[in-house]
Structure formats: C-alpha cells, structure tokens
Image (cartoon, rainbow, N blue to C red; front, side, top):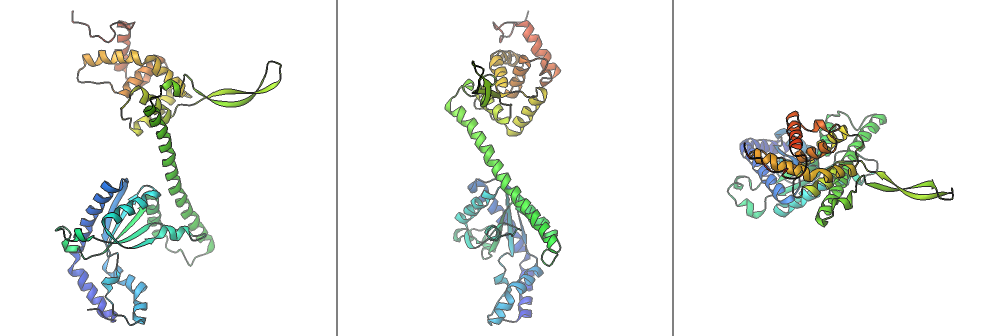
Length: 384
C-alpha cells in the first residue's frame, strides 16, 4: 500500500523487483519480438537493431528520489515507487534515417496504447545554441486485445518505454555518456562538446539527403525503363551535355555557341543502360558499384555514351555466343554482368582483357575464330 515513507517504499519496491525479476526479463524479450514484428511488417522501415533491458533496481530508486520524491512529499501525496518508473522495461529501436523515426512512431501508435511522448528531437532543435542527445521516447502499454493473449498475460499490466533513434543519434548517446563532465566545465570545453554534437547532427542530415539524392537518380533509371525509351534516346554514342562557350564565327567575331561535354560513366548511368539491355534483371547495388569502378579503372574517363556504344555494337554477337556456350554447358548460365564483360572485351580486347578470366577469354576467342561471321554462330556443331 502506498505511503509517504521513503524507506518503506524502497523496501516495497526492492521486494517487488526481486520477486518479479524473471517475469520482467520475459516481458522484455516478448516485447522485443512484438516490436520487431510490428515495425518490420507494418512500418516499411529498415531497422539497424532492436534491443531491450530491465532497468537496474537501484537505478530505479535513484531516479525516483531525484525526479519525483521531493514534490510528492511536499504535497503529502502517498506514493509507490513502482508507479513512477515508466521505463522499468525499456526498448531501443535504432533506425537508419531521421525521417524513419516518425514512421516507426506511427507504426507503434497504430498497434499499441501511447501513454506519453517525450520528443527530445524538438527539445534540442527548438533551443538556440543547444546540441546533445536526440531521440523520441514513447511510454506505451499493450493494447486491450493483446493484454488478453496468453503470451502477454503475465506482464500485461506493465508499461514500457521505447526509445527511437537513428544510428548517428545512438552513437552520439553512447559517446556522450563517456564524457565525464559536461556542465560545470570551462567554456572552451563546452564549445568543443557542442561542436562535436553539431557534427553528429550534420552527419544525420547528410545521410538522409544522400539517400534522397540516390533515390532521385534511381527514379530516373526506372522512369526511362517504364517509358520504354530506347537507350539511344537517353545516351547517344559519347553523349554530351550542352555547354555555352565563346567561339569565332564566320566573320571572325566571337559568338556564343553550344558545344557538348562527355558525361563520365557512373553507377546510375550504368544502370540506365544495363536495364535497357537486360530488362527485369535485379542489378544489386554493391555489384553495380564495384563493376562500374572496375570498368573505370581499366578505361579511365570512359563516358556513358562509349559504354552504350560497346553494348549496342556487341550485344547481339555476345548473345549468339551465350546460346552456343549454354547449349554446350547446360548447367552453366552467363548472367548479365558476364555478358557485359564480353561486350566490353569485344569492343576493346586490349583495354578490357582482364574483365574475363583466362579460360573465359580463350573460349570466347576460339568461338570468334570458329564463327567469324554471324551465320550459325549460336549453333552447336554436331560431333564428327
């Protein structure tokens, strides 16, 4: 029964905590599984990690003493320490980007009962010259339906806290706790801490902007494919962007003219061209990145138009070789990356020879000698 006797309430809380430690730990694990399922299947957000803990018994008492005890005793209000520890069971969701935090919050709010919200993001951003730990804290309860489910009945009465942070915010929080003194310190140290916190905040923002810019580039790739644009409409051979320069006109007077500047091959240009020739193939980002880098290393300054030219000029011949090769090796298929390697090699055997292994290059060279023209190039010769 609640009272105003702090020593008595400490003893009561310790007895409650020790007597329910196993239930609290089971509750933590059960809630982690529930939250992971809700966020993964409902939120559409990539999560870095979800973890939880049961707050240390003495930390709970210390928190109550510092935050609630004085005011409650001043008002002569009976209290129970347990009722004021909203984060006895605490979960942390670490997502990738700032705008994922709101998506996760909305997902949890759809399925659980929100008791309270502490928005430390707004608290920091609305305070001039202040930097520090940012994140969103939700005090939650199981919704009425879940409280009746067998797997939750043992801990249905417990509230729990969920902290939602980005990877950068989580990293800052961990490091911030390692700084022993942050308030009553010389101004020069405060400035250095604030500068560091600002860099973390900038990193969070830049990661989101880079993601958005990458998505915009990929949208261009997908729009070209969806619109059915021929790759020549997008990247003619050695495509170039208009550029205004001063040149001599017919009467030897300087006039402004439009000239063209080659556009270097990058991962997005590679995708727009590759998707044209291999519609429906899933080009994994890390493979595209590495392959484009490999091509650029062998042919520094290669343009998107030149790459397109190699593909357009050689893809029919390479596909003939693909039919011949796969007919002979029924268990082996040449994937689009391998076909692109052959197209580049056929376009410039010296520059791109290392794109193929020695065995692959010998097989291809022999086939080219055996079938110097297109006729019957994809057929398998009958055994003598």
